[in-house]
Amino acid sequence: MDVHITGKHFEISDRLRAHIEGEAAKLERFSTRIIDCQVFVGTEKRMKEVEVVLKVRAHTLTATSAGTSVYQSAEEAMAKVKAQLKKLQDKLRTRRRAGGKRALREA
Image 1 (tube, rainbow, N blue to C red):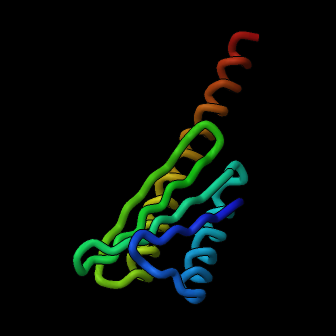
Image 2: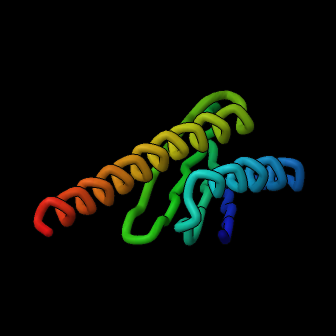
């Protein structure tokens, strides 16, 4: 999975980059279909805003979080994307199971 980190009016430190890449690496446990992960970090007034765009095969998941700490905002945004990814995987699993049951009934 490729992780692209972009700062909007914000300097990305090596420590922050490593933290975000570590959080993004945890997402690979939930799906092997992840193609790309883009993280946008910016400031608006005194708030630090983090937006995560995760591209999975045929789907795009997006989450945004804002707070006073960049690290906390990054963790919250990654948690939101993780929840969306889990929901998508469950949806795909149940769809596959239902298709298999339907195929057995018809045969």
